[in-house]
Length: 397
Ligand code: IMP
Image (cartoon, rainbow, N blue to C red; front, side, top):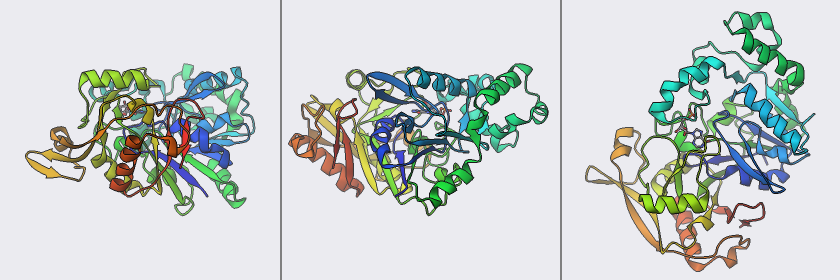
């Protein structure tokens, strides 16, 4: 069954680990949006590796990995990742492909970004300007690097043309028509896993605009970002942490006190995989999650990092907001309303020692109560619970 795994919060939900866990049941893993702003950290044979562009499925030697047309490619970063994989002995020949239609991030995009970076707190990876060029029809795409004459029309510097030429000479065979490739896999009944980057609340259309990224992590992005048929995905796994984090600027109604943020940040390793920035930490926000579940039509939930909450005397879930004296249970479209939102919390007793548990029945009763409440509130079953950093720290429910 073709499946999508997507983040329901502000990114960093721990998708990489789950992709790594479920990848075995698939033949193909495909990314559909974003670029090197994403960062999936995977622990592979005691090596901690952060991939930014290449799908996490690459750690499984028999999986085909595809970067779809909806992404934006930082060529130098891609080369760094390929080299890193080579160093740890992971082969990718004949199983790694990039869409000819994916747009290229150009040196100018990094320069333009400097101002946006300050206002929005972007990752500084040229994402916004690259997508802006795509939409204003001034971009160049991976397939274009096979025609230097065509590239010259875009006023690209000779240095960058050289970078592109080097990439073409070494890795040009990875750049293909991925629409044809995906459909040929579909015809052969190969199972495809679509790997989301970022999360619903960073979606350009549905997130906390303008404090969002420039692509659609929500399911629509799968189809525009790969050319897969809208009827080809029948399972959508929505991933949420057991709490919330956000990196960069923008409203974050359930943000915790500084003291609690520090505690969670340290125990959860809450530092950006791409920029190293400390992540802002907050309680789980069921108002935004309910909205995310509605938009994405998820068929199941995955809950990550429950162990990070171990040892807290009390855990809280935001079930409603109060905005200008009015109680609301819907996530507002207006950013200025989100900025004024004061969460209304439901309190739960804390728990200890969930780290490394891999059977549901072994979880403390208090943790089970928290999990059941989330399931009931969101009307969706939790199928996976991650209880630690290691590959095996996972409960399959
Ligand atoms: P950009 O995607 O670099 O333009 O950044 C826009 C916003 O999205 C900023 O708030 C970033 O911190 C955030 N962002 C982008 N990618 C990620 C991610 O993978 N995880 C968490 N936040 C992200």
